[in-house]
Length: 346
Image (cartoon, rainbow, N blue to C red; front, side, top):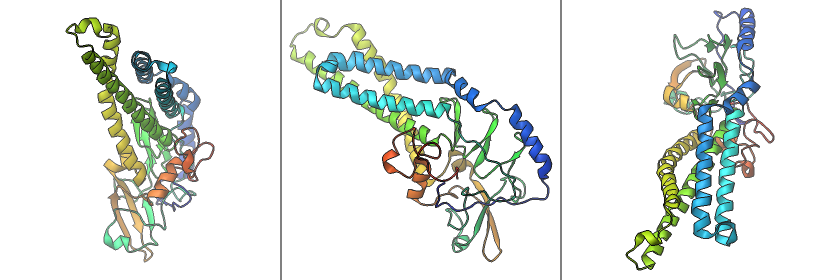
């Protein structure tokens, strides 16, 4: 979250001994691979290489087999415009993709399970999806607790042997806890979390634009070819059509572009909703177990999905950054890096 997001407290529990937990968490961190080695290792993942191959194939076909023979490439103003626009969109998509793959998805800060951390949750502001009696109290304290058991104990990771701050989840593929984990994406060989959520969101944004733009060029190219064929007024279609390889490659690109545009576009629409409501995929499907202590001392415990929704503007700036002109620049702004927004993932 950003500076406008209030506090989340974790419930204390005498059943957890903090001295032994510190040494255990140190041993767990020692067993985990270093972030640097993981970043470079992910770039060699088969799925990452496949994505890069698809990008390269689409770019070469659109530029060499569509724009060049159709509009003359860089030799005409129209061809130059389309080539530069498509190159810019593809470049931004690839930069966003590389940042998503190589960035740490969400380093977990030290947390003892007893109290809240600065700027890491909810407290005085109202949260969504609570019952009418709870909504009437605006001075309540929200507590994220374990979903299992009696719903009062602090969240503790038995694999990392450490307490989990709010919105933290353990990833079995990455073998670690991730702050504000959304999901593990096989196509980036990495988790999507607090540290790379902006890069992932912009990757979907620029990839959707690139695919739709490529589809537009491909369809326009096909329509123009049909018009040229009709204008020849000849029954010999074979003698006037483009060579077979020039047609086969654009047809192959079209067979890939249509399903990819629909799939990536749908995923982008889904994550746009998550950004607007300050949710994660895990929270949407599993909910967040929250115990709310009212000013009167009464408590209400239930599972909600929009606990961290603090308004559209605050939700968006907590992920994309406080400077709107930099929202679409993947390497600045967001929760980490130069020009980052205040907050640490909640």
